[in-house]
Length: 429
Image 1 (tube, rainbow, N blue to C red):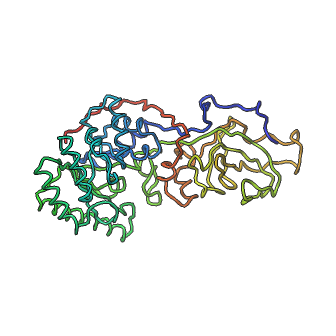
Image 2 (cartoon, rainbow, N blue to C red):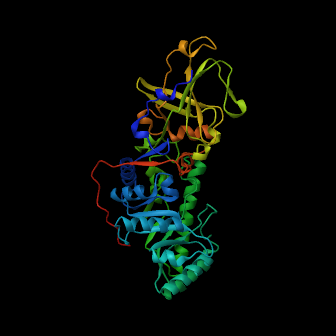
């Protein structure tokens, strides 16, 4: 049986130009920051809002984080930082609120970053030279954070290269071209509680200390040292230093679900991805679903259709298994994705359908869900929804990817905090 369009009962809250939506609870953003602050109470706090706030919405999340007391904001790309500063300016946030960015390609117009009062990461002498040229042109020093490679082998100056970079920074300081605000790095295995993982983190911290000593020997003394992201905040207090960076935990997701779930950590997932069912039908036993026929109905089944697909960032690797919860007037109905994820749609198995094979629609029993009922792909497990971790497990990936890759065409709906917030007080750095 295919339900008639005139039988649809769409939720008014879902009506928009696009059927699906990602609902972001800004109250959860603030609550998560408070949990992470309690874990590192003596350190200042940076809210990391790169990649459009991990897919949650750059402007609303940044302002919510500031209302919750975040002292800094951080993004990866310098271009993101320019967009962020424009949003902050429009919201009346003073320029004394520091914003750090750490990725810029050779030839970038660094002067624009200086004009926007962006703190910049320096890992290599070529970056320093280009930033110094912009500072000389603008007639003002650039605020920089020296990145030390402590074992990630990504950005950052190795301990072998750091003396040359430190000497160049000292010269730039003497010429009034840079203000060394910070020194920083990343921990590559802070989410790994194994003996090997703990040894790796200890080695990173030791390398960071050695890097700080190299800088000091060159007369470079950053005011702020920062090493810990969410995993370091939660599990490695010796990595906290002066500033910590709240990333995945800000969004209520665990950096290592196999070690501790969001609930175990007191974090609340902020995003719920949902869409109305656009079709509900019964199919006979041994009927294929979606491209390639990779799933066939084991019995007569009810199938629902959800208007989200890989063009929206739904991983194709989550085919044939990812959980979906359908909320109906009669209660919640658990289902799972069957068949391959399509570009714009996924099929959900809603369970067995009684009745004889090929039965006419008039003799087919009442469906377990109807067109317009809300399908929740992931959200807060405390509400009964599947989690981003569940979807990550099905796709053999991590929760970071599940939320951050959601497509731009999905509207983000931001729910207000509905609680008192602290007024933004930018720190003096």
